[in-house]
Picture 1 (spheres, rainbow, N blue to C red):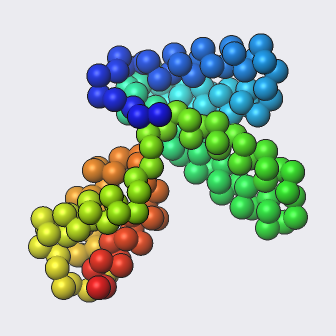
Picture 2 (cartoon, rainbow, N blue to C red; picture 1 turned 135 degrees about the horizontal axis):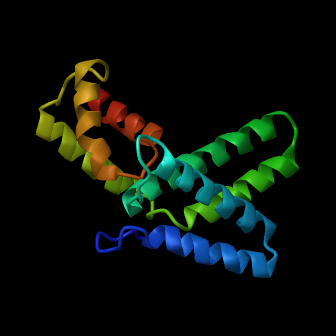
Length: 163
């Protein structure tokens, strides 16, 4: 799903709520678990801090991205200890969450964004460590916002700075 800029503040959260009801009626346990967890995380974020507030769709996407990453990491952990059923359940929940996230950048799109950021900060020819890496990451991270995993972005920055 592509999260557009013209959305109302809580459109994504309302879609998740509606889909939760559909999952209950369909008795889809994986979808039900994933959506309940997502709504709980969203609600917790809304009530944390000094006062309760509604999250924007961009903030909801950040929460969903974080939760999807947790599911991937949990699946890997379950695989590593010989628990394939649990790993499959975590992956299924991660796939449900992915439906609410922006489409991921293709490798060539990410490479183009990184190259533009390198040129913008003047980091050409610098070693792939230290201040050059930090400046490029600071520039490119907001541009990929939820469309590429941070580790994937960092790997591409390192590759281009080293090359």
